[in-house]
Image (cartoon, rainbow, N blue to C red; front, side, top):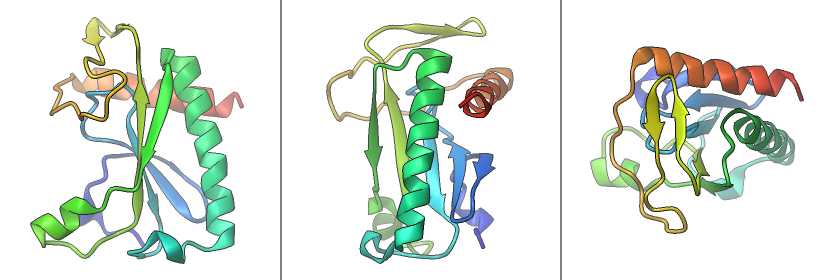
Length: 147
């Protein structure tokens, strides 16, 4: 069972083996975290049925964010560094879904830009309104249901 202390973001939806969250930092519009439901530290230990379900989530999220916001491409990363750097919580396998944009996107009067498009430089904390967060979640879920 997921431990809430991990704070992967706002709950979006789940399947049998994975939970999808809207990431706290929306520096890249539509960024999500996909976390394995069971506690696991290593990617090598993901089971076949978990991989199969993860593939479906990849398809859902990429299609939904492309339709909702016009993302140009998508980066996926299993980045576990912070667990070892902070040495607070035990590592929990999760994947960062990071949409990338070669253009500006306006949503609810807020402008989202990807100043490092084409590079792996992360964008720092990006403040948005609670209403904009809700709209992002609604649009992602709305487009997943259309698939």
